[in-house]
Amino acid sequence: VFGGLDSYGTRNMALLPGNFYGDTYFSPAHTTLSTAPVYAFFTNNLATPITIDWNSGTGGSGSIVVGAKSYGYLDLNLSAAYKFKSRNGEAFTAVAVFDADAAGSAYDWSFNMIPENRLSTFASVAWAPGSSNGTANYNPVWVTATTATTLYIKYDGNLSAISATQSPCGIAYDIAVPVTALQSYRIFDPDRDQTGLAVFTCDGTKIAAIWGQDPSVATPGSPGMDVGYVMEPRCLQQL
Image (cartoon, rainbow, N blue to C red; front, top):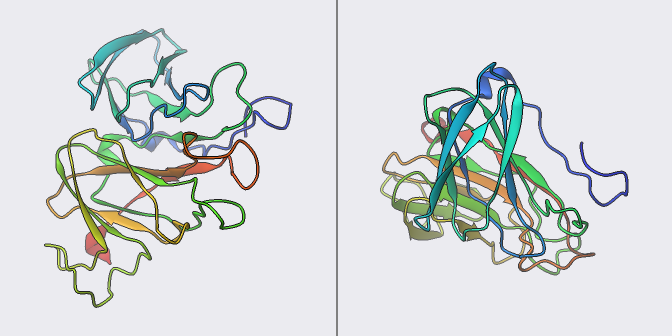
């Protein structure tokens, strides 16, 4: 847990072991409400500076230099997903923080980014309600793909079900969504609860997925929930 001492600015984040460090990361999330900006933060534990190149699904690109044993940050204000890659292959860590400005107190959550070499073609989520009382859906699953592909989505996560819609993998799905590389796609289950939801590709394209509050549709108070977390990659072939 980190953040302010005001009971509003706190955020939860997993502490991942060193084998989750990498040189390339993806953020499915970006700023959707100007008063609740999303920032990416990068940590460089090396004794020399590193340059991190970034590009967005909008076509935007740039770079940021992170000093030795220091950190840097980037405002994710373009309406698409982002890719971050160290120029010379150095390992670093990357997280994203919602409502990261000084006045932020309404949409506070964060997530770790998973390095590209640990991503897979499949992710699913356990507890993932859309609101605290089930009356609204403010907390979608956010997904981005490393290249253009089709996302197959099963709302209840039952991939062994007999269904009229079967993916090219031979696995049941509810909807299929074509996406471009670094498109940020948000999945809202019609029952207002993303619990159990699964998303996968069948062409080998890796995806990065998270669950969490979307400030552009959420209320600043109850039943909105300022929560979210990264969805760990899973192996579709082991189902």
